[in-house]
Amino acid sequence: MSSNNASDKFSLWVGRVEALIQQFSDLLPDHVPLVDQISEELLTAIEELRVTDEELRQQYEELLWAHDVAAAERQRYHDLFHLAPDAYLVTDLLGMIREASQAAAALLKRDAAWLVGKPLANFIPLEERRHFREQLIHVARENRLFRWDAHLRVKPSAAAIDVSLTVTQMRDLRTEEASLNWLIRDISERKRAEAARQQAHDELELQVQERTAELVNANALLEMMVESAKDYAILALDLENRITSWNAGAERLFGYTEAEILGENGAILFVPEDRAAGAVEDELATARETGSASDERWKIRKDGSRFFASGMTRLMLDADGLMRGYVKVARDVTQRIQMQQIMREAQEHALTLAALEERQRLARELHDVVSQTLYSASVIAETLPRLWTDAPAPISEYLDELSRLNRSTLAELRMLLLELHPASLLKTDLGELLRQLVTATQARKRLNITVTADEGAPLPDVVQVAFYRIAQEAFNNIVKHANAANVTVQLQRQDAGVDLVIQDDGRGFDPVKRQGGLGLDLMRERADDIQAALTIESAPRKGTTVHLTWAPVEGNPTP
Image 1: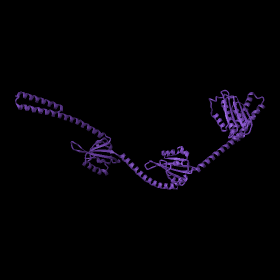
Image 2: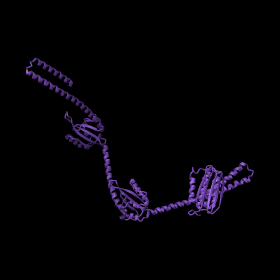
Image 3: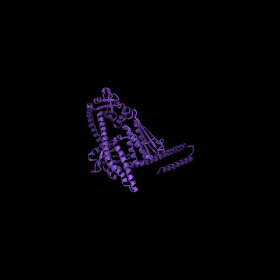
């Protein structure tokens, strides 16, 4: 019978009782006290019954709600038990399996239904079953949580796996029957990791012991070496760059005694220009960042003398890996540096001599072979027109062109010989050098060039070379840029000085817009080197004039 049906019947019954009381009251006289008392008590009883009915109805609804909650909890327990990633088992107090989760079935490699009724001890290795049963006895006697590590052997031929067993006793409230709830976790990976960590720890401990012994021996050896190292300066500095230790080699190398130098800033060993450039700070910063810094530089002694030191600055760390200071090692390699410089200079001199000898050899071969051949070809080319007077016009033109090409090539060769044999630039008169330049220029481009050159006393070597190079650059500019037809060259001697004017009728340029170029800048630099006056005048379509003047004054080069 549902709660609503019972309540409806109860209400119907109460209504009928109330109606009977009313009928009975109507039949009996009003003065009968017993009837009134009975009616009142019946009504009171009816009201109490109504209250009791309401309470029972509320309790019934609460029982229905509790039943639904219990059903939901049972379903939740079922889902948690069977779907949880960990392995769960329910056994009796003797360890017989009553229920197994899917994870437990997977761990034991058996079907969950097959496991029911099997003793859990079957999966415990023989050597551990006694301990397992002792633990079961403790769990059955004591109402608390037990946890221990064990091994499971899921198949006789398979290796045992490491597991963690967590078990607690539960009791059914209805039947008072006790059971054991098991949580089984595979800890094989954790065990392997712990074993690996323990092995690594043991190996590290052994290495630390061995390293400690090595460090003790090395420290003793180092102290002996520091004291006995006379050729090496070995000193220690704190983080503020103050000197904290100083060996005998440092005293011999720098001239300071230990009492004089301890507590001084390490910058005292650097030359002033390095201190001003921040070399001290840079060296320490490099040592902090990379662990060490090269110390290859000039150092200064107590007496102010200098020497070239080769060494290293290293960062020192304490046992906790924190910076504690620096150690510096240095030795005097001044003689080695000087010897290296002498060797470099000797090698450069030898290379210069070898290059000069090679150029002279090439110059001799060009002069002895090519020059003579070109000269012979030129003579033949100039003689043929005189011998072959009735030669056809085209042939005469070819012979003339051949003669011009031979002369031009011969001039170019002579200029090349001058470059290969620089001494010829100094032995040849400047006027002759200018004529050879003109001939070589005409070999490159058809130009009408007039040369006027005075003879005079030899010029200083640097002056002669500078005039020749400036004239060479001027002719290069005429060939490349001027597009000129006529060029005049005038070389005049003025007392002990000389004046050179090179003028062309080419396109010219605007000096304001074209302040210079590489060629013009080189010409001005060469003029400045010999303290000569150089002016370059030009205008568009009005040609260019280069005017170079040199006169011997005090401080100028002399022959």
